[in-house]
Each structure stands twice: as structure tokens, then as C-alpha cells.
Image (tube, rainbow, N blue to C red; front, side, top):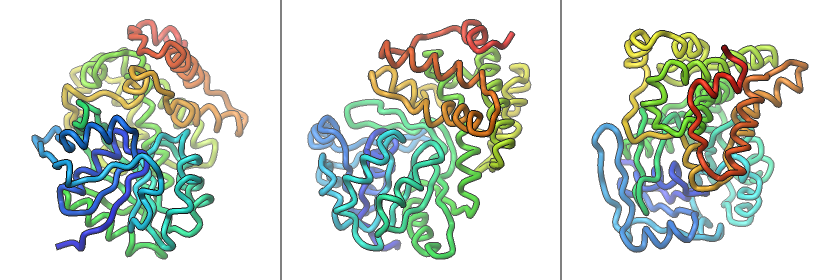
Length: 343
């Protein structure tokens, strides 16, 4: 039996509430730092968590706590940071007075910059990078559904390996497979390449499964990924897979004819019909997306190294236009291919 931990989740949206509720269901004391609407929903009905493998469970209202101020995470052994990347610094600064000396803080966020920001602001903590491979949809007032497959990854570092191992064991014990990896930066860049499909999905307005079944939508993502891989290599970075999804082969796989894609994809990742990208969810809820930390990160690296990234720059413009409209634009694959300059 794993010793119960006191776990705080900073930025309890879809991913954070899902991870926290799975841990709470396994007997850990969990505090979610989230918005009032989450607090009200959890107080009324608890938290329901489900996944594509058939797991479906309910954490009662008294089995998990939701707070709306960072002081509510004071004294936590472990803090999982799951806020959007553009909120990382503000979250870290607000948490700083309440993070215990020697606490373990793990960034389970998109992008590649967040762990460095957390280390800068939370010097008293052991900050580790992490990676969440799957999509979680906020499917009801307090219902969170994991729609794609994969294992969590946590940074393995010699000076904090015992801490990372303890958290990985707790997550795995709660039914959330987690592994340690010493090359976490390359894993993060690899995940970023995979995540370039988020924008395609958000701009299409259709579920992930349906979007990926359309070769022309896949060609949009493949063009962004092909460009990204060239920029990353020229920038002196490397990419690494954390599972069966090989970032360097993804443009080739996505560009394949539908019959071949279905065969190859079947062994790479599972997606259920409910799955959508978090960027689609942000657009439909009228929230700022993470485009600057995904496709925008490629544009930024290209600028820094004297390269060009016209495909990713065009996708950034389309998403920012959709942010301004506060809606998924539901663009056809043909319209997207034209917008990014791919025949």
C-alpha cells in the first residue's frame, strides 16, 4: 500500500481535476485549486471520472476539496501544476508563500518553458517537469473524461529521483500509468510536435476521431509538424517519444492514404468519439488558447535561429482570429490547406 499523500492541484481544469480525482479515489488527500463553478459543482455532486477503457467512478463531495485561493494548497506534499502555460508565472508567484520547503512540484503542462518558470518562482521546492499524453474533456459540471490513451511521464533527476518515483507510484496506483524519463526536455519537444494537431482540431470544429479520419485535415497537421521538426533540429534541440507515437515519423504517417493510416494508427494511440483537443474547448468557452506555446513556440524558435516557419505562423493567425471571435470557426480541410499555403 502506497503511503497516502496530500496532493494539491494548481489550476484544476480538465487535466488537473481528472488527475486529482483519480488520486482522491485511491485514498490520497486532494485539494483542487480551481474556479468557483468547479467548487459549486463538486460540492453538489462530487467528481465523476471516466476513460476510454471503461473506467467510470464517482468521488463524493467529502472525498475531495476545492479551493479558490492559493493559500488552500499550503502544506501539500506534492503540487501538480496544470494551469495553462500563459498563467504559469502568475500561478507560481501566488503559490510561492504557501509552498512548503522541499515540496515536490510537477509541471503537467503543455509546452517547454513552464518548469523553468516554476523553478525561478518556487526556489524552495523540488520542481520536476512532466508530460500528459492524453486528452481530457470537461464533459459535465463535474465530469471529466479521458478520451485518448498514453502514460504520464515525470522527469527523472538524480537529486530528486526518490521524489519522482514516489509520485509515479501514487499515480500508477490510482490507475494512471506513470513512468520516469531522464530526457524530459526532448520528451516535451516531442509532445509539442504531437500537439500541433490541437490547432487543426480546434479550427476544424469536429471531434478528434473524425478529424483524423480525414486525410486533408491530417495533411494540415503534417505540414506543421514537418516544418516544426526542421526548426527544432536547426535550433539544436532534439525530440523523443514517450510512447508509441514517434514524433519524427508523424508527418509521414499523417500524410498516408486513409487505409494505411488506419492500420498504422491502430497500434499507436486509441481515441474515443468524445475526444476533442483542449484548444477546441478553450475556443468554445471563449478562453485564451495555448497557441503561443505550441505552434507559436515553433515560430519563436525559427525567429531566434534565422529560419522561417510560414505554416505554423499562418495557423497561429487563424487561431488568434478564432480567439477574437470566441468560437471554433469550423473550417474545412480545403480551406485550412489553402490558408497555410499547401496545395
